[in-house]
Image 1 (cartoon, rainbow, N blue to C red):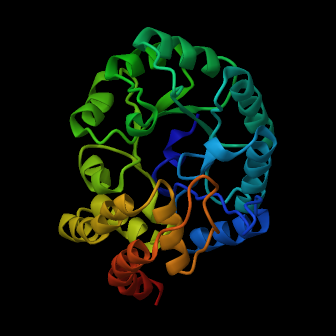
Image 2 (image 1 turned 135 degrees about the horizontal axis):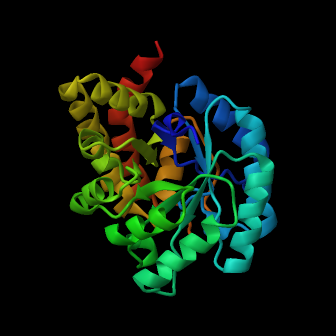
Length: 302
């Protein structure tokens, strides 16, 4: 496996829906072309920001198919393949391999709370069913399930195609442990924008970034400056973007990023019910955040 391709900034792609909440694949094409023109290093589809939990199985597979077609091999495509049950997860994982996804991403089971040995067995079993490289996805604030560092070690020891983890836990100590405890050094991607700069400094490989949906050029610059050693500029951009993450409290996940995208001219339509739009006050507060950051994003386009 050529893992050097998997690095840098990928938008945690918001799944576009029409006003009547149907999958909008034509809009997906436009979003992807826009992000690639901004220099993103990859595309991540059907993750939590992509509302995978709201998709039925046929929509999930159709989304992966169209994403691969739209990207056209220009950057790697990392696809969330997990469903709410193991049978459907297996079918989506098999479809992802057939479609030509570059890497499968597997979030922990949710609602149920498996033990660490059960988690390891779950991931090892799924990894054994595909030839794709597999990225585990840790997001305990959403799933109430955490992948312990030793569990990642166990999984990577038993499953050669498990190559690392996307970590949205918000615990930098644990993130560093993922890197230093695995015999095969794990790929580590940040899923929390406020910690992306810190993860890069500690040896992380990039981010699957919600904010990259709104400000892709700034996220790419943050990565490039951190990698090149201009840490002051990378830190400045990280600080500039931090109010967008803080604004998540203004609405139910993932409406804030979707409405920020609309404000930035990258609309992916509404969130799916039961999540509704922001109220007038929250909308105005979010707009002030977006408006404060937007001039720097626009300057990079010139």
